[in-house]
Image 1: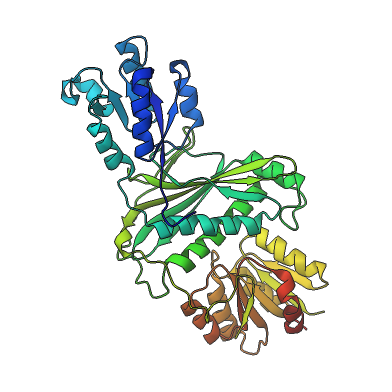
Image 2 (image 1 turned 180 degrees about the vertical axis):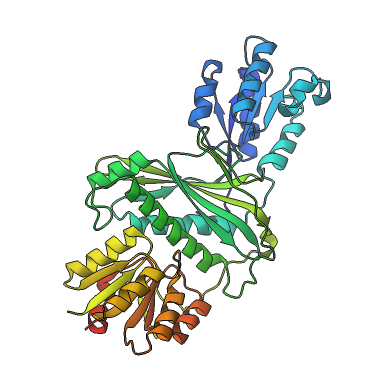
Length: 322
Length: 121
């Protein structure tokens, strides 16, 4: 990764107009959006398999009739209320001309001639929080390093970090650990699929001493990866003399198992990293989603990366005798 | 035979560290947190070295060390912290309680094995 980290966000593009699609794609490319074009008969399937989206761009002519398009918008809004849906209208009609019921499901409307409203949505709903480059770059580096030490036989890689508004949980197992400092308060969350981890553990001597892997093994390993990443985060980003959070306030974290949804009480977009651990010999892989949810406090202007003096540096794993 | 007590709430770490030490001929017992570690140390005078995590439920590692020093005044057990923590203030707290050393995870057994053997002899 270079010095500048370009954050992106995945958006579903529900638009059949070939004339407009080029302009929408260009807009996406210019604004850090990764557009996924979807056929109208497959929207709900695509939605359920993409749990890390930033927004939905919907054309009012996407379905056979306007009523059908509105019905689809209602369905999306019902299953993913956290995703802003932006409606592309064919005429100059503005947002206020929509019936009240529809104004509740769409956050804005735009036309292909004037995409400024879409720009506003991106700024307000997706890229509304500033994440320092050193933080984003550092998180990916230290997490890859942790994954490399815990899964020695697998090749760890990271995708471009991105912003999500989705609150859907990936996989079956996740960990949470608080991050507390003068400049941030929130959680780091790691999510993965149990079967994928068990399969890889079965086929390789990944972790020393594991005779057979069960869901408890997966829990333990995810817990340790979380612990190591948390330790690395504190070492790199939270100074020893950090005054700590000025507040002890908390909000409930609500987890809905039926809908695989987790709420931290804030509608803020979340910083997400996706890692892949690949067994190059047999082709099995593990996907790991890491999310940073600074729901209690976020002051990036006070962030600073800790400069460790080389005199004080002791490599991880080395014994520092007193 | 001298024993090493590995105190960590992570089963993965207990397996990894304990397994490595056993494979290298050392006698190992494990504890799941500081409270459990204190109980096991009191029950077994053969323990010569403790490897302990810091952040654990019920009782953290540094509190366990302080309790060992205050409740078992004659204990000469050597203690090394094995943790993700690396802050100078925590190390100072450990030093004040008389720990012998500090290792920032991940555990790299080969580089510390000889020292562990000496400290547990």
